[in-house]
Length: 272
Image 1 (cartoon, one colour):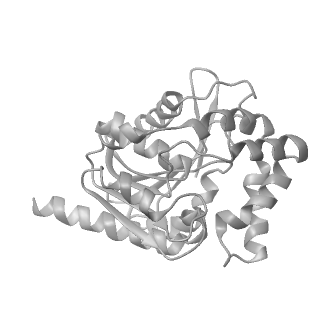
Image 2 (cartoon, helix red, strand yellow):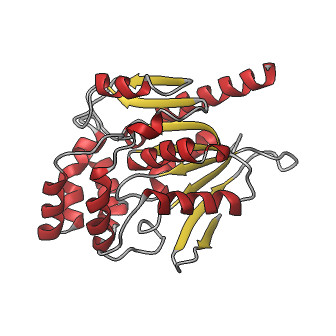
């Protein structure tokens, strides 16, 4: 089911709900937050794993997917994005959600759990950056000179890894990243590379699963271990693979691990 939430500044936030749970039950909600130049469709392959047991909600962050595009001069902030996510959680009638985020969406999920902990039951972060990123200036130059579609085409192999087929790469390029509004990316890429949430992660207290890969070209396993070790009740899962976008490249492995993590947390809560 497709829905839209209107924000006070006039921005429309698009989201979908997939729920195949028994209609006589009240399912818990899992909210999925996508990363750079994507939409809720980035979680497409995760949905069948979850929707029989959870109400699955996928947000298109402001600026992306079918939500309102942002102008190039828009001043992006973590608080604004977390306000949007919190507004959706409350609009859904949830006290708390299981929050899953990938890439910069994972950074938002971490920040939400740290700064608005009453809203987050459990946390799943798939390759979330916590430190400022280098090399983005080249992306900006590429986008400004050759367009979003060409940039997506030239960077997709690294996201999805060497095992991705050409058909898979073409789908991600033509249906997700290549469709991102130029103005949104121009503003977002001024903001997101500067993100530094190291202080935030140390305040996370909810049960947390972080997923990364062995061969990512963006961050080392040792680097991830260094900050994950500062998160209370955190578990790190390292998958074999050279994709830096594990949630998109290895959706079945990631989703199965996430469900196992949620099952473990549920069992522990029931036993307490």
